[in-house]
Image (cartoon, rainbow, N blue to C red; front, side, top):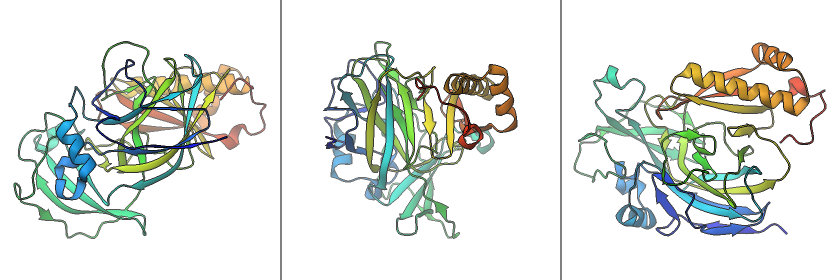
Length: 346
């Protein structure tokens, strides 16, 4: 019987800035169970009067900031999950925890040198009924953003109102999600990895699933880096970073094959991911992952898979802001609807 679990973000259930396969599980579930889970904005200090509640303030006050920026909720232990199994994370529901988020023009943003490496904060408000968000004020950051969890108290900077009537559609998703790594020790939360992490694929929304290859017993599922909206690329260094409450379903797949990186499934597309120090390298990895996926799923030749990717595969920039950049390849399901599916494929 499917159970619904609750996993709140508290000082006992979050870590800040890294993954570690020695973490003890904060929740144990069965395959197919639902989890109501909270993910927190690690830029909440940009406007604590709007972005803090009591639980977030306590986490900022108490939880050690170690290595990276992201606040990570988990891990969740999945009974009977073993290395090389597949974990499917299906997004059932997402909603803003509070109706404000933060975007940073950061010193690590793609155009930072064109803006003299000067950093600015834009605070966005959400209208959940209309499904939109819009900027309400900005301020220049008063010091270099060089550590996680910095706080800018109200009144310490001059907030300039945004008078332009902009409307941005909401695009709620977890930028960070995945399973725990096989390698021992702390792993920085900044980059995307084969086990997931900071993938930042804006298409990972309600109604979609991401598939991850299990690396350690129990899988160790987590989420973090929640976003209200992001363009392909995450150009300035962040999306609209906003705390989310979500419901996810976690499904364990035995005897299924995933080649390397996570794969996203929506109603219309499969999406493979590639990472690299350059977009060329990331594009190559996403393409090779797509070739492997298609040839395994449909038992077609690599040459035919390559051909279909050239004439219908769409390559999008996932993000350019995390040091290791990302590309995702979108494969239209309808193009392969007449082919027989390998039972060992996800």
